[in-house]
Amino acid sequence: AFSTVVHRPSRITELQCSECSGIVTSCWYFVHPKSQATAVLLPNNGHAACRRKLRTMNHFRVVDGSPYKLDSPNNIDYCMHDILRHVCAPCGGLNICTHGKPKWNCKTCRLKMKR
Image 1 (cartoon, one colour):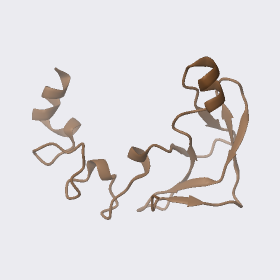
Image 2 (spheres, rainbow, N blue to C red):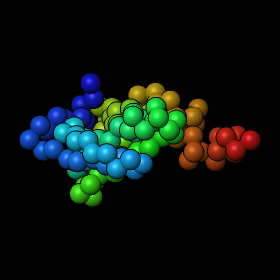
Image 3 (cartoon, rainbow, N blue to C red):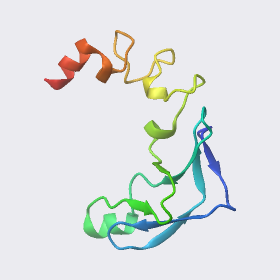
């Protein structure tokens, strides 16, 4: 379980498939650890029925335009420093280079990534 994810059954948000326009509801929310801003969680894998039928990824959109976040662990897993775990140097984040920076922000490592 992620500390940034909360279940709010009294706050139901409608999500609509971008392909078939089918409606599902969600009452799962991401709460940012610093700002406390909330966003409804959308399934990262999209609409399962359309994915099986069409063999393509079809994401949902929030019907009322509320803020949203995909439910991928890289988007919602924050460490004790209130930083995304995969980019937290003290926690040994996977996207931290040997120079202690996010790989895409390190001049040396960024050049290696482009090759």
